[in-house]
Image (tube, rainbow over all chains, first blue to last red; front, side, top):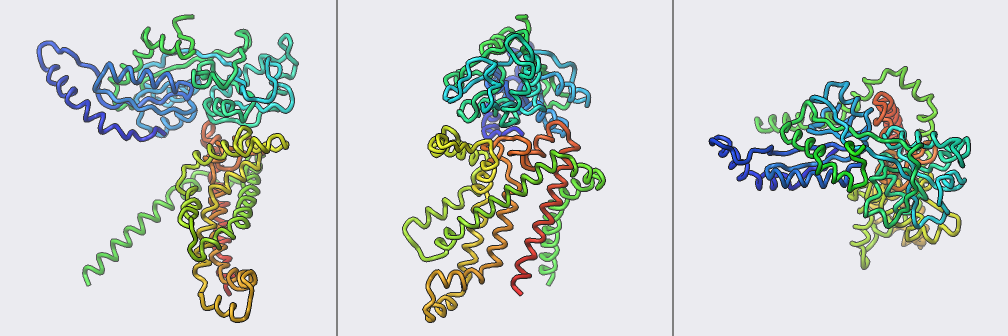
Length: 276
Length: 262
């Protein structure tokens, strides 16, 4: 559920004179500026937390009448909330599955577009007493590993990547099984995995490359999973049929797909779609 | 007369709305799941595991709170002392704290890198991600319910009984055990029931501090939450089971005081 926006009335009030101005101008012969206005609610996968906050601010700056509220959680949870009638304009999922779930229920307006990709990495707590220098070390008995729950997209991808490593050169046949035996918690979203490793409570976890933000980089080491065994997460975005503010929703989606949006995403360690 | 009748009607309406608010979600949960499905779910290992874990941890945390909270309640029920206000506020704090905040606090205290955890780890004791962490989280969140109820019970004991005991040269400890405690039994039981119910429903502090692993830290509320993310029907069934279970146990506990009072 999105946190109630305490500043919304304030922000709307601040936007009012401008909105009024725009309205006036739009009746004139040549409208100087007529963009979307009003309140926009975006539900996005937890892995998008930092980057979508930035893009939301860009949208607000470009369209002074718009106020963006974010709801960040596991995609599966957001999909369920949308199904249950949450008033949301835009949905950005960390996998196709939960976008399909929403689309099959007739809740998407138009089409869902893939806007970014993400890869998996293993993060290791710098403070960890266990010596984890290679992916193989995750299978050492006694190591504390956290993964996202299997219902969460990143949790599914993580298990898939571990399975692919079974029997790979230098890996045991039952590598995945051994790692799974070390799992001490199935977190409800990817940020839960990050925070438990960051706090040093778990030794290692599997997260998206984009989760290694400047804020976390000081506390974790990153182990890459070779491309051949890695899972590429594909993120779709869509405007919802019941969107209270379709104009602002469309503006946000096109911002995300624009060169600027893609650059911001790349800066946050995501893989832009047009770069591939 | 007329005003009287109107106020009675208004009160009736208010009560009806309040009861509807309580009954509707409960009834909807139960109506959605046929009893056959409920019984079938009860046989699935995930459910039995979570149910057992919930039962064990909530009983353990309640017991811990009762044993450790009793002296605190007695202290607070007695005469004023420096810092009493601060202690009272401290005891109430977990009731107003969002459980997730409690979970973060517990991690920073008892986590592997935490204030206390740092000392425990070399001794081979790590708390996060264990069943002990679940019990700790529940005790933290549910503790105030018992302490406050017990304190109210102690305060309600007529001072004349204490004076009578004193004239008979009963020691303070003896008076507490033979006079104060027996007279407070209904309040203590009510407090224990509330504590137990709160512990059984604990979610936020548990998932933050203890994580979520079936059979180890996945209690019923966590199982419901995780099921909700992938299988709505399973989540509804789990919720219904937890509901029936909690209602039955609360009902039994509610009846205990009247039985023992006789």
